[in-house]
Image (tube, rainbow, N blue to C red; front, side, top):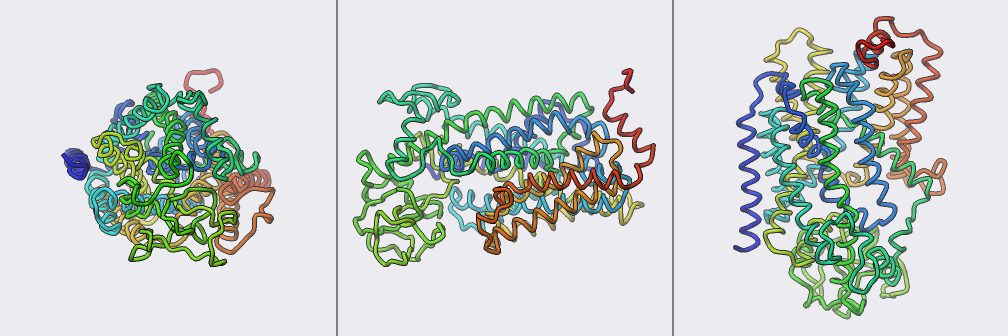
Length: 596
């Protein structure tokens, strides 16, 4: 069978599986819609949590980020992984024991204030929507590449699939669909990873890849350092960020992911606290299978990419001699070439191929076959002048998707990666849409505006809000604002600066009151938004960074401001009611102990 037939077969079979599960698990009550009835087994919930956690960012982008950023990319690996450990050990069991399955519900009841609930509701929707807008764009890109349709049609197809199991099945449909998606996703990531590791290093396990020796006796890291230095890049093991900024980025990613609402709610789909802890352990095992493989996959992919584009003599390969995968991904817009010096060769080196580093495609190919437009201000190509030393634009997302084709692995492996990419793009989008739906129907309508409405009415509002959120997310997937790519990290910054401190203080500080929590959340919210908007969209310069912290990492400073503000205001205002303080003691201290 041809690659296209195999791809359609694998993706079609996965779609049939997801829709079949959605029909089988259709939610009939708000409890099933919100938390899958609370009867999911720990192992199945761990698998679903891993699928929810490992979004398109983990499956598609993480290896690419590490491959192209080198040491700096380690912040994402450590931050996202450490964030889950922090959530599983520090927050999830206590939240599960408290019994409120949404972040606004917990904050509203813990601080006994509608204002705190409303602010948490705003933050949860804002965080989730920023995140899901990027996911829907990822759905469109993946579908456009593998289903050979326009990105707009790709987004619409993804919306239809998500509608089937998220809107109809709610958390019940999402949970069991995500179990299937995890199985597809992990096979799609590990199978090519094992192939690559065996072909390049002789080791079967990609986890041993970075220190493995290649045929010339050098390790993978040594080879990459020398390759990149020769091409004008910084060494792979040398980052451009300062140690301080890298630490702050890691911290904001850890605390931000620990505060993401769509992950927190997963711990309420199991019967009790003990099962919540057990499911957290299972999820960590399932996540580690992918995350420990990422550094090896990133290094192998970057070496393969350089050798394919530049050839053994590092002088570039003639465009006519480039393999078919190059033209395929060129058509998808994830790789592009502009022949600056007119020699007909594809040359990859340090620097940006176009102004701003963004590809601009022409309707027709150039004289040498290139489709990328670039207009250097000098009018002439100078290989010693930045930023036009390179002739290649490479999107980071290409690495995992194109790895099997670059390494000339069997076509069924390419088709499997296609199915895995689709699963990754859909899994997190569904979880985020459910958070938005639950926030509107349960926290806004049921707990605030219409407390007397029936279970059936609440379920109707939940489905309606999920449909509206899906349509809005789909619109931004088809018509993304220019800043979507930059502000995806803002979701993590906002979660760290607003939700995370309120939850931590709500659990571990019995004296914390609503005035302190609300003040801290407002300071964290507005300081993060102001800092990111100024430096990302209003021309702020690196020399103006506060304490040398980049906009992506500022959420960590805003989190500190949140904690400090909350504690100061707490000391200046009355303590919460004694009933609330006893409730917190009951959540934190196990029953039957002498500390109870």
